[in-house]
Length: 514
Image (cartoon, rainbow, N blue to C red; front, side):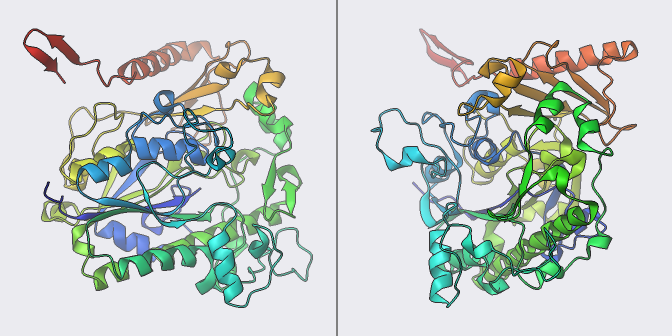
């Protein structure tokens, strides 16, 4: 089999809000290297992940399947071994797939011994990947490198992230990490990829992941003070968490738990206890970590050019999910609000067919499930029938595909097999602990699997209410709109039911369809 032309580099950050690109006009954040990549490629401004947290969202990214189909609903929920994925697809096209970082893939336990070490962590590796660098939350390779370089820190996984003590006693300060920027976790992962790139002369697909801007929210100098907290816009929220909790029973359950933001493992503070100044320092640090990742992207692009690989490599930059960053008195990525699911995507197709569309900003809705079919399409392969997404190459080459989706969809499963927190508090079965979102230009609806008397639906007019404060689902004047949204969600689920064999027919003439 002839090798497929070109290489693929998929860069995946962790917990990156969609608007945190200066190419999209962010008033504070500056991302010159990603802006340059977008200027040579296509920026998808309305790109959404399919779910959260890390494991489920990466399962959708790497299988091209919605949550309702792959059913890896939480960090630690096994991913069925029968599913195709991006690594296997690369191999079919003659490329060797490498992982630098993590995929958070919990393996299918069937056929494995109960004592198999892989069944004691959700941080497994997607089947099909070769390992370029494997990083788990223990950070062992990085911690070992720091020790070789003379650093001393508490000997536990997050020990290197203990910030320099703040002389003013702030609970969250702008104090830097104890390691230099060139020795940071982001730099370490980039170094590993660049070392490999310096000797790799075959055809490859590489997935390079960055932990940041995911917590711990501790940045090395100069990124820790790159942004003044006074220049950071405050979060969008009501006056206090109690007011937020009163908006909906799911929010009441959420805010009734102890919501904490882990700056470091020893500094775990309730979100409600953060004063406005502390929240601004958190936001400034988050933006600083974004700037650090952007700088690493610049190093990668420079190295690809130096090796003569930039113009034969498809580059995609995205992340797994977003970050609330204090909006609605929430941090992290739970729930249904846009900031937890709206994420960046840049696609740089090096081929001449994309020359006329360089710098294009696409406002149409794209989704994480589109990444796998885009890569397969670029490599000249056949997109599996099971894929829920569609190739984005036509957009990256200046076209506007007919019949493209008019809304984005995502799901969130909030069951907890360990504590049964939501199940107990809300009186729900595990299968009722999930929600589906349909997000169009103007209207956004949220449908819960639970009885509407327990968790009623939500309907937002995003033109009048971009912060999603005013639920119109109970307004008699909007019942027609709510019905249309519910019907559209049902149709979406029906169209995307598992269908690998559904369009095939075995006949006397052989297999037809497909």
